[in-house]
Image (cartoon, rainbow, N blue to C red; front, side, top):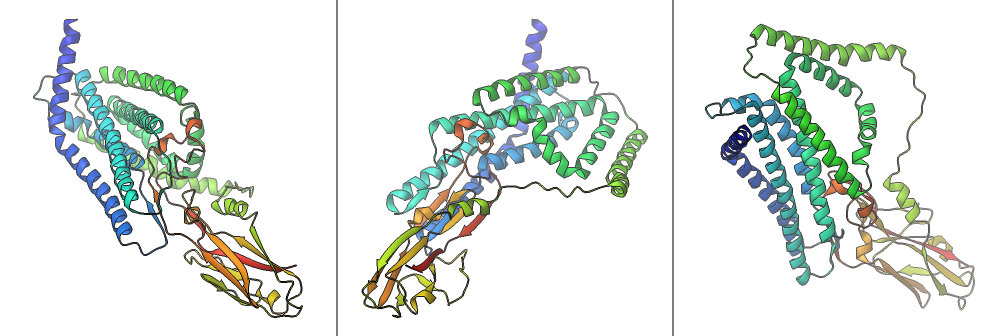
Length: 446
């Protein structure tokens, strides 16, 4: 018991020292986070106070996903600098286990701080928008939220962060235990992954499907906890039997670097050359659902307005006028504009010589998807049509709409509990858009 208490006291002492020495890095992180939030808020406030666009989108980065990617890079850097970081603290009493355990603990503290920071940034942004919505008409949140989703998403983000720490540190202890052999093996593995990047990207999710595709939130936490315990235990065992003071000659180090370079070159250049000579192409390609396919489904129906013109004799000419419409020339193909907020009217040639007693106005409202969110529905597009003497009046109108797309916890999109609830956009860190902001009106005569 005495040895255990001494080890725990040593770990606690090293942890305090490392927190003090890493305080500057924490401060820089919070400065960067504050600048990101201020940039987003400045763009929103400027847009609201100087609104000159009937339909405007404020698309905010998912802070949690951005920080998650940054954490992975940061933990890898810390892992590679493990020896040098601990060498600077060698004046303090420590053991292999104490050094490693204190490193894990400070990384877990950092991961928790990062998750909390992402949550606070989201809540602050949400609060500011909520305040502005009291004084600003037609300001909408594109995504729903709730305490349950926010709490569950926070722990999902934390679980993935802890697993990333465990995996990175396991790789680190293997590299430190089997330095040269591990370096050669990892070099070969990375080189193979690079030259088969698309295959690696395609099949990697299948290998991890038991975790990253687990639809049940409860089972996910059980699997994540079990996997974290196994990886961490393996890391502690390997680290315990690693001798860090073993000397290594410069010649051996240079030889290892040379071997790694040769392996990488051979795999990345010579292997593809050999495969190219025997490669065959079966011509099969995977079909991926796109925004355009969803758009086609959206256009399967149209609103109809019927205008009685039975009082006009056949052969009459009817002019078309109205507000916010663009009259397409006879024979001109229907045009959809990404930016134009007007309605394009086609079929005018049928009104040059009237044959029929009813004019049918078919109205296809505009559609514009941003990360899976249909923006134009917030603008309430509408059309009215009536006869004014021998002229057909078509008025198209939309409301001003300012739409806020502020996502959080993109890593939680895998769970059935959150699907089809309008809690998350299509993408966490990328941007996709498609469709048209212009409406289409076609004229038919019966």
